[in-house]
Length: 166
Image 1 (cartoon, rainbow, N blue to C red):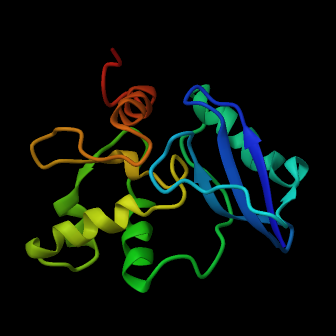
Image 2 (image 1 turned 120 degrees about the horizontal axis):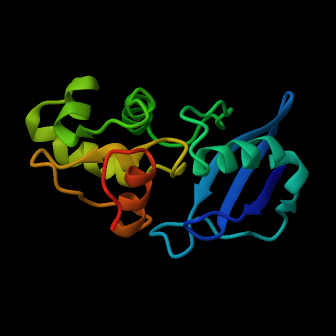
């Protein structure tokens, strides 16, 4: 059964989508308003804010600057094998740090020519914020692509102390 809930955040209302799992819910998607490729509530989905209470609490703690690592079960079977490898590499980027797209390519064993494919996989990350694609920047230090918009990427990196927020 697919469930969903919304959570208010400093970035706008977040849409959480998940599947029933042992001990709660496995998160399949976390999207922002106006996000490229954002999930949209479908007929048959069950509105279940109580199922997402633990995730919502972690998000509130993160935005308050008190949580630096999420402990959330993710839904299985989302994405291609390559995308899952890239997303797993994102999960290793610590709070308050950034890496380049090339560094992620190295971590997944892709050549320099594969950096574009890595960028595409990062752009398809269905779990914004909790799977930290916002921590990936250009080799020159410039902020590049973020499905939620560069302003939000900048705000997240500011929250984590990486950037001074305007």
